[in-house]
Image 1 (cartoon, rainbow, N blue to C red):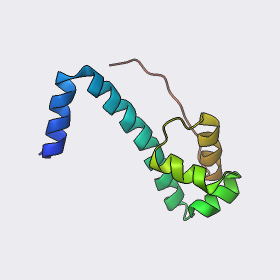
Image 2 (cartoon, helix red, strand yellow):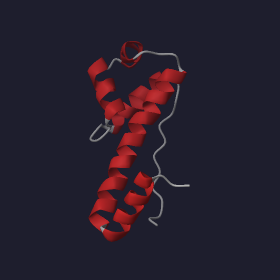
Image 3 (spheres, rainbow, N blue to C red):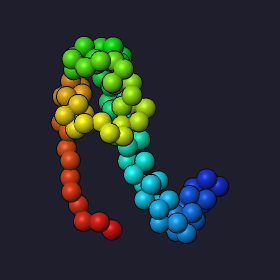
Image 4 (spheres, rainbow, N blue to C red):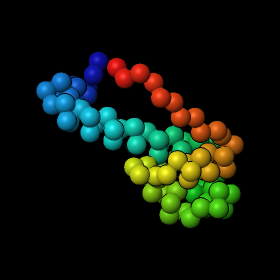
Length: 95
């Protein structure tokens, strides 16, 4: 069963294509930050420890984990490698 929020978002996306595009884009950026945070936590690392490994300021990691909007792929890749991961980017057909 969908929550009231999920129902609202789905209805609004159907009515308003601009809202749908913005919501979907924002969600993808949020999801990327969340994935990085989960990978860091699974590795048992603090933001400080990851910053040292990746030679990246802790503030950059905190910002990306909160909202990855505008984060360069080179930085995302460096963080992924410091976590023992590989960044994979795919272009797929739009639905």
